[in-house]
Amino acid sequence: MDRIRIIGGQSLKGSLPISGAKNAALPLMIASILTRETLTLHNVPRLSDVRLLMRILGNHGVDAAISGKRLGQSEESGETITLSARDIVDTTAPYELVSRMRASFWVIAPMLARMGEARVSLPGGCAIGTRPVDLLLMALEKLGAEIEIDAGYVVAKAPKGLKGSTIDFPKVTVGGTHVALMAASLADGTTIIKNAAQEPEVTDLAECLIKMGARIEGAGTSQIVIDGVARLDGAHHTVLPDRIETGTYAMAVAMTGGNVLLENARPDLLQSALDVLAQSGTTITPEANGIRIMRNGGDIQPVDVTTAPFPGFPTDLQAQFMALMTRANGSSTIHETIFENRFMHVQELARLGAQIRLDGDVAHVQGKSRLKGAPVMATDLRASVSLVIAALAAEGTTLVNRVYHLDRGFEALEKKLGRCGAAIERLSGEG
Ligand code: EPZ
Image (cartoon, rainbow, N blue to C red; front, side, top):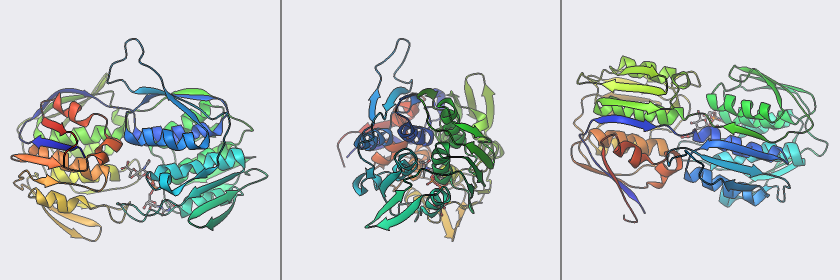
């Protein structure tokens, strides 16, 4: 198994490219099931989750292909993937695949909408909490689906098609909103989604569906209205830049000090996280082709944060921010409100010397810890990358194990940080 070795203490300087967003690419790929025509996605990140979803979709009969390199395209440009679901040959998504990637559960919506049936394994729990799918099923039931649980599988049926309705989510759910959008696009009549997730990835999916012929208004607000259509067509769509990757590298620069241009990054996608970073003493300057992040010499100031749905501070940046706060000039509190168990990184950060006390869903971080390199591992990708950030500021060598977590969500992490001066290296096949 690969490991990543980091020798801490180098400040980051230069520029690095931000890839297309994983959490937009996945639902966009799944939306290909809605049409017999070809959906072409540009700026798709090179990630193991994308490869796995191609396999999962292939199992349903979707032809997925990565286009060859084009003139002017560099190793850093995202990939173009074409997805063609001419004939759906299998409406079952088996446990072996769904349990490896939760987002693949979302195939239930386009499959049901187009084929009138779907049999999808329940994903089970995961490292960041129980993560139920009750609200996704509630949305499909509102649209007229009959749902049964059979031997660990959700069996959803709508032999006469789905019918538009009002879906009022009691809690903001990104996956629930994706599922409702996809299903309602092919339903008969009008659907209103209330308390919809406003995450940029939801807006990106809606924009792609609109290009495919869907009639959607209000994406990016808490109320989305969809007028169902009888069929959708193919389209070309470019995946938006990854706001979590952007925030992660911004925090890495805040941690080590330095000056880095995050190319292609868009400040509007993560304003709350950038505001918090600015309060911590980091200078953030939007430029024509990205965001420049600088911290020169001064102390890192402690800032309290509470995670919240968009436009609040994202849960997917909580672990990275906690790593930064271990070096702040004072103590801070971090309140996790989205997932009940997303503090698995705390014990590993402690191995590097961090002083963090957990009190339910609040972490109290004592600042100015002297971090020292150590072997570490983590249980999910954001936790893993928080260890990378801590390691960049730690004295000596850190070995990050279970690199496959990083490969799920961060394209070419060691290359991107390496070209900005980090002493980081992938050790292949060891450990
Ligand atoms: C998406 O997960 C992201 N995944 C997550 O990113 C992200 O952390 C999360 O949204 C929140 O922003 C992808 O986009 C692939 P939710 P999702 O439904 O859709 C509860 C990463 O690291 N809930 O918005 O699964 C749920 O338990 C990943 O890239 C129910 O109770 O999250 C959670 O507490 C991790 N019932 C809250 O809602 C349901 O039926 C929000 O979850 C559904 C969700």
